[in-house]
Image (cartoon, rainbow, N blue to C red; front, side):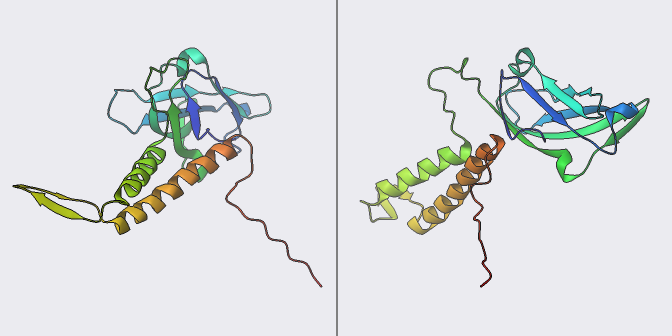
Length: 192
């Protein structure tokens, strides 16, 4: 398994992972680093040291007391291995990625919006499109003030883009829960 796509602050992080070229049984230690992709609030890079299993795999764990302190937002993650003064940063596609840390629902304040950026933006664009259905002017002036609206054609392009982003998030969430990719379509060919 790889690092999860989404993690809720305050939840237990616990998964097993294999690094065949650097097994725990050879004395290697695996470390994950989560680097915030946001500037505020201030959040230091998070370091998680995995424990080695007898079969050479690693157990990656962080308890609720640890993860509850993680700030909500997007993080880039990467991993490396260390052994007796040696260090190797792992650079394959399975060795880096992104995780979204979500708000702990047990500590969320009233009014907290748990929707993703893509979902919020999509809903805002759709609301503008619906509101524009009764207005036919793209630009108008009242006195010395003028207002120019985004053309409907541009809004439709943006809507489609954010629909795809929201659908990708939904698919990733379903797959992280063990479901197959809902965006794949199966085709069967029969020989006559």
